[in-house]
Length: 347
Image 1: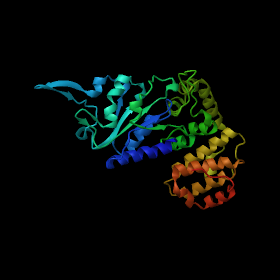
Image 2: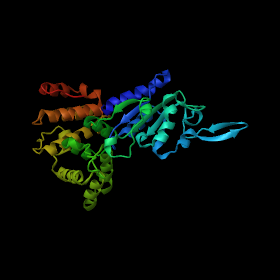
Image 3: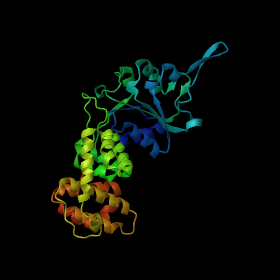
């Protein structure tokens, strides 16, 4: 399932807890695709805390608590890390990350917590949801087969990598537009992981965020930049990104395009992706300005000039995801739409 769809599922699960309809959710996916980040995003948007429990780092007693004697009976001291209304709030997310890396003895201790929302006398507060995530066995991580009794306590979703969803996330999180443009040009490199070769560094949504950071830190050190990019996304992808960034010196004048001047579209495909991405960035920065409509109009006019209509569709689609409905109010939008009527605008 696409990340944008999973976002809606998890958000609905969070809201359903208030009415007693929440079902624990298990997200399956390869390393680095963004499972943990998506769950953190749900908590952030709902202004609640995430309690991240790594069962792989625990013993059964860490979850169950420690026994102590009270007169002639034994009671259990509830671990302070479990959700508590007074300490953590009435609502929140209990996140069992890397659950497939937990030994069977530990995962067995979590059975009652996940399905019955309790451990002995302890009960998970009603407003708290239970989400879990883990790698699949074929991903070469430290994984155990999920026992059937545990699996049957979750609803299960496969986390699929999707470039459009990642680009929308990247714009909203100020990822360097050079990385966005490169992945528009080389979409197959968003996630390129071969567990059979067990690479140390490889392209993934997580590692492309690392490359964004590398560009900020080492942009003035050309001799170090290629090595740092390779350290983030792997040898081949790092070299390709560096070559792409170096070639951006040949971009047309973006300011002239924004001003409405007649600027030729570059012949090179990689530069077409780069200029399209740069214009989306300018649209985002102009969104709240007094001349936003004028900027949008000039970008839409330029979108009509690409030799391949699909390139203009990509540009305008990314603009729509980034700035929303105001794009439709610009007169140039209807003019552009008529010109590409035979090409579907994807959402």
